[in-house]
Image 1 (cartoon, rainbow, N blue to C red):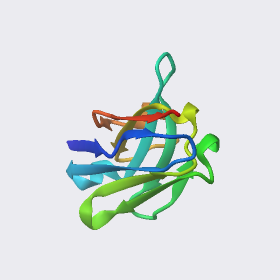
Image 2 (cartoon, rainbow, N blue to C red; image 1 turned 90 degrees about the vertical axis):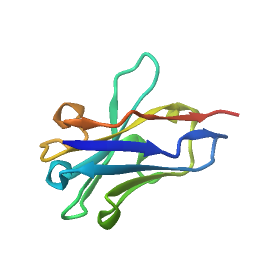
Image 3 (cartoon, rainbow, N blue to C red; image 1 turned 180 degrees about the vertical axis):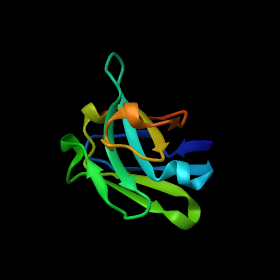
Image 4 (cartoon, rainbow, N blue to C red; image 1 turned 45 degrees about the vertical axis):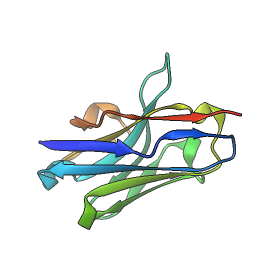
Length: 124
């Protein structure tokens, strides 16, 4: 089992920045892949960014490339998402997810463990 707790959401104006963090606890091997997903009202949950704990390899959705950065501090079992140049369309509930292995790191079906989510609102 893995427990995930997100923090760091909030409200920001367009062009602003926010950082999210996700603390993992439990059996570490069950969180070899960690990722951030988001879900806006009326839309499906979509992958934002993912990272492999061992290699540090990352994957980003096209709509956040160059603006968001995912990182992981293994010693803290914490994954971060730094979000820059935020747009109103980035408004969503952001979820942290983890899994032992996944073929598509940005595919939601491959993740076994989910956090409760943290709200990000981008508005002027």
